[in-house]
Image (cartoon, rainbow, N blue to C red; front, side, top):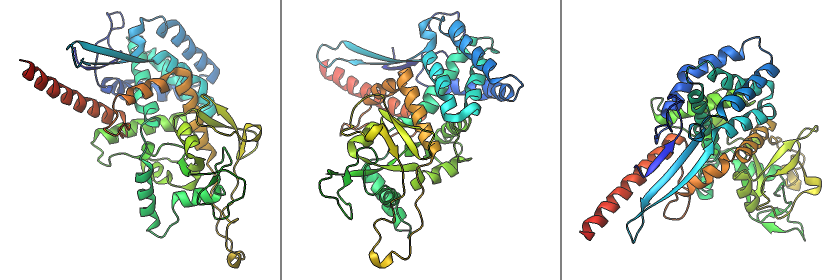
Length: 409
């Protein structure tokens, strides 16, 4: 048996025994692109009402997918390698439940993409019912959403050092950096805890001081891809972006627009380092209120939040002119864009889906197995890059085992 296995039904006969296992999600994505997507577009543009589509989608999940054998609706990663001393294999498995992912996508579609987003999710599920192998099509759809949509939000972002280098390069072009703009707009304070930055130009006595991070609301990996249109990275990014456009109210209309927009201050906010880490792992999010730029704090796991805002509510305001020199007061700087509500909606919806479905825990455990020599999760931009990383580790383990066995004999 292969040391690395990813199991999921991808269009095979659902009446057969447990499905064939494969490291790659390629078959699922191919089915999605070639067969499901054209049907999704037809159903989306049909006269069917949104409530009827949602009801039909829920019925398909409940009466078809959830009654299928568990292996047919489960995406499982199995890691096996020889034990160091007695040469016996040890095996660990982690799974993501594709039916739960679909239900979570339906639940949060309205919040993230309005009726358009909800119609897309419902249409995608209903489109599977037109396949001969309905369960296989549903598994392929769930696998595509898991590996080519949700995964991108959990990939490791560049380190703080890498980000600072990137931002300094932008500053060299004569423009204020993302970090400078975001921190000055937020008054050099963590928008969650109220702690002030160590670099605060006018620190207030009695207010706790800590390191602040200009945090991207969406991982920069969402907009990073190989520009070679024949590469696996670009093809994967194109699938991801297409799902993003359908599921969200994303302002950017092309991959290139999205990449350029992710360093605009409207895509960031200032957070204390622990709050940043918890936001980055979707342990908390912000949910819109009826008042523009005012959000409620939603906590999934109470980790890394040392202080909560009054009434669990955060208001964004532009403070960038509060720190101008007195000699420059008469000439106010151009305002800095406040966080774009669409990006906050996307983060909140992804947080809800990852926590409701258990996919977030699946990704955490999966990525934990591929840490580098400094115990950091290896940086990958997309699922195909993770598969390459898996294959490289598999080769290293095979060579190491061969050398060990040669010494034994």
